[in-house]
Image 1 (spheres, rainbow, N blue to C red):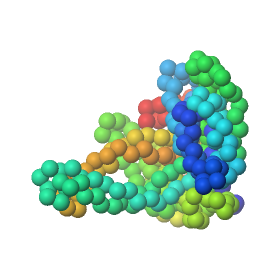
Image 2 (image 1 turned 45 degrees about the vertical axis):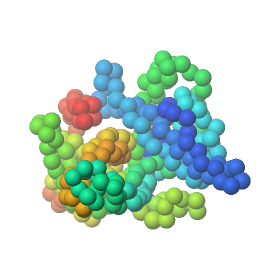
Image 3 (image 1 turned 135 degrees about the vertical axis):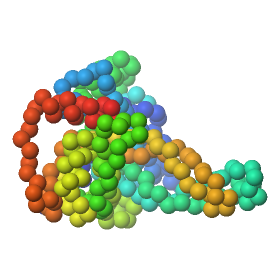
Image 4 (image 1 turned 30 degrees about the vertical axis):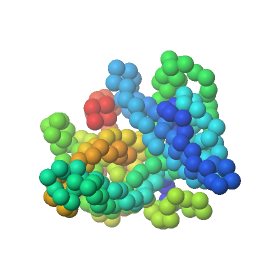
Length: 287
């Protein structure tokens, strides 16, 4: 089966684009934050529970950066691209006043994974809308505002846990190895694979946990989620905990199709439409 990594977004530019320029004054790198709305596929309209996500769009492809440079805060934009991951080195500073080494603000380095959307198609679909018009536009197009289709292989066995604040919820997550469909010369990273995190809830989570393992091949149909988490690391000098906020990007599946190397006893369940609507709504809007 062909490699597959397609993200489709339709949303509002949240702030003016961040553009870097080369020595000749030409745009060389670009970044935008796009506010999208979660669609109501499978579970009907629940306007009281509208949830927004703000994926990061980043590129150094000349044509894409040139398009970004034309954008303004409030523009409505359609983006097609790929889910990308990149290893970066982060410098952490400890401010413990009782540690002689930390008093000077000495830093140490950690390696972490940053996720973003690399666009290969971008078009402005509306300009000059007021706030109400922008919200109405997103609501009318929620079906196509945020979608992700990935085909890949599990890099690790799925991990199951129950959130501390949601004792009745089951969550399963795992990294997916997704090969690049193509490689742009101007790509921000030279890696040949990406590692999006898949985060499933309740019924989908249980089926994934019981039937998938490292090496299983799956097709994920879902959406991109952005959320803020607290990271904790021990200072290598004074051994005190250091905490900082970090934004992570994951794919939340509407469905996961098992393609290869899954549980032999697995049978595709008969779908109960009404129960599916309820369970999916609970999983996505309460996550």
